Length: 95
Image 1: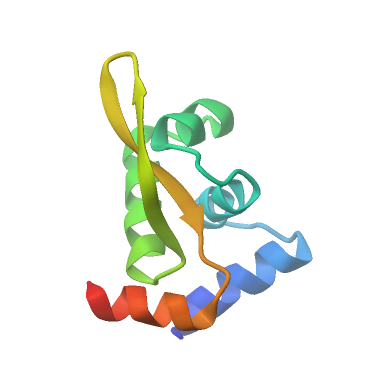
Image 2 (image 1 turned 90 degrees about the vertical axis):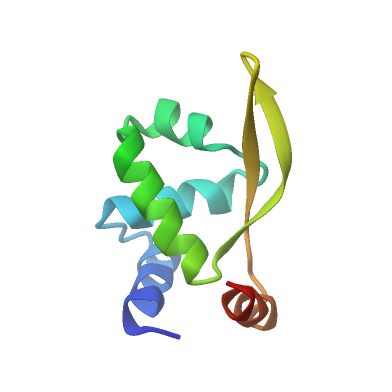
């Protein structure tokens, strides 16, 4: 696991969230099935920043898509935090 990924997880575990990426990750962890729209609306983080954070988080295997939701006629991925280190590793390898 990359050092910054371990830092994100430690900070979230300790409640010491410092970065917007950590805020996005904590949000997804606390709200299984949420979408990018939920994250943007509830955190106030702008779309580009949320998208960049999601990209980094998903590349690290910490979050996966578990389905889709239709919101105002648009389809968005439902997101889930991955607790299992073996599943994380498999996600990273599948990218």
